[in-house]
Length: 509
Image 1 (cartoon, rainbow, N blue to C red):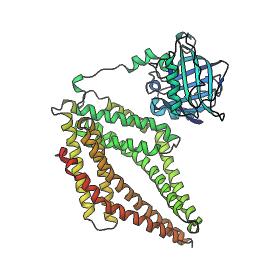
Image 2 (image 1 turned 30 degrees about the vertical axis):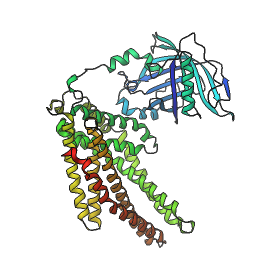
Image 3 (image 1 turned 180 degrees about the vertical axis):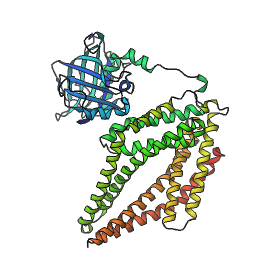
């Protein structure tokens, strides 16, 4: 399976419009014109179009220069990540790797043909003076048909696609402006499949409109927070499966944010259901955390090695530490992978869907304004944070204080997430307060990382000593990390004073 980013812009075009000359675009020195080719693609989805409704497409395409299975998942409005797999036999079914990547979206639904598209494509390749391919402009004539034996024509249309290869977004914008000047129109659809299935997608997305009086209520704001973080989790699912950098961290943060919202604002939701989902989020976040912590540990060790002068780099010590951290990461990653493929994970996603779509939460009936209700939740978390910080700062140095600082970090995280949730109702004050608390959270997080790393250095250093190896480097790095920890602790009181400043807390009284 191959992966590549896809950054493109689509425009609808009438049949009689001629494509303008493209060699005047910024950085373009030559334009290569290809002969028309015919592309045949069968798109697959669940019966209720769960993939298309999340702007995800899965197809088996023949013809052109890249026949095969293509899965495209959204990253931003004009960019997607494309996963490609070999074509295989026509009756071979969707490759297992691609099935796994859509699992969080399909939720166990069977994948079957939903549309068949025939595209006659003329491609114009834009090169710079060095011969580098900057972008491709495709002129497409599209015919959409129903799948199966009937093969009835659904629609016919023309569209232009501008896709970056090695060019930048300046070229993309200039090409879009040029094509719009001759009659190209931004389409109402986001993909060819979306146009082909427009009627079915509209019907699938249609649902109860809800009570307009509840829009902007505390309950609606909390549900929107949960919905946005659930989208982050589902979007990050394929990235975690393919071990994209930082994906584990991003999904873990989304999971933590949802758990925090369910805890802080439990009175505004179905309490029993929230407790069940929160317990499952803790399970999943714990697995992600073990893998992420091992990943962070390895990165910190890499940074320590990079700073060492050549004469102090003990290869034996470095290999012993790195091998152990790599093994810890692989074990933890294996548990995450197993969890992503489990029915328990799908039940968690379904449970979050149920909470987000609950039509009659308690908070929608609250008589007080949303800002008041949500600020009360932040106030409860802020009080817990104050108790935690005071206890940590009053404790003498040692393992007990390290534990109290870690508890303060967790309290800071919940306080920050509560303020972020309240921001749509409270406004700038909540956003600024969240930023101040994040500063403290980051400081305490860095301190916790040094605590964990020093424990590893002591343990692995002991193993090295037992093997009669030189242990100088372990002690040196332990001392460096001890200094980092002391600086972090010394900075906590000032960070706490900034949080307690009158301008940041008067709205929480």
